[in-house]
Every structure is written in C-alpha cells, then in structure tokens.
Amino acid sequence: MHFDNATAGEARRAFALTLAATFERHLRRWMFRHKTPKAGKMTFDALLAAGLERIPKETDYSFIAATLSELVLVGNVLRHGNGRSVTALRHQSPDLWHDTPEEDHPWLEDTYLHAELMRVDEERIRRYGNAIVQFWGAADELTGTINAPRY
Image (cartoon, rainbow, N blue to C red):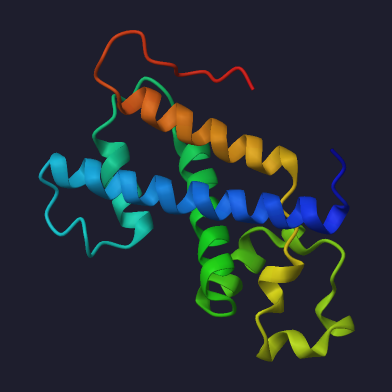
C-alpha cells in the first residue's frame, strides 16, 4: 500500500491526537483512583507532576515529562487550532513547523492552518509511544512491567 506524504502526515497527526487524548484520559482516571483532589480540574502539567510524584524515583523522568507535555500540546493544537497551545508549542518545539516560516504565510494568524502545517514525523510518534510506555511501566505496581520499550 502506498500513501502520499500528505496522507501519511495526516495519519501521524491523527495518531498523535489519539495518543494524547488517551494518555490524558487514563492519567486522570489513575489519579482519581489514587484519590488526587481535583484531578478532573488540574492542568495537564500539574496532573502529570502529581502523577510523577507517585512513581518511585529510581530514574530521572524529566525527559518523559517533557515528551508527554509536548504530546498533549500537539494534541491540543490538533484539536483546537490556534491559541495558547500553538504559542507554547511553537516556542517549545519550533521544529514541528520546520519548513513553514510565518512570514511566508501571513494568513496563519487567523486560521487553523498551524495544525495543518505541523509536521509530526515517525521518530516523534515513536518517542511519544516510548514515553507513555515508560510512564506506565514505572507507575505499574505489578512485577514484570515493561519499562524499556523495544521500538
């Protein structure tokens, strides 16, 4: 099966949105189960920080936290278009728009094209998936959990 670049890019953006929404929903449920006050109203970063506090500190999870925060920002941009998430993400990860300088596209400020022009490559999808597996592997209280993904 052959996909053109536009279709493949759209599929990766859709998959990133699915990963972001699923991870955030599962994290909120997990935090409710652990009786975290106001887990439903916390910002994602506050929720993630509270979740990381529940995990044993054998490893530095700052990379995982940064990756998961980026993933949720990507999801927010894809879901809502322009706004605070675009501003934060363009500052934090400008390489997502590596070939679309703003001065060449003056209409971007008033449209949802920021999401349309975002480039989520396969390596980023892999990194998002690895961060999710590492987070849940560290959070899982059962023995034999996967902490180091093989992909």
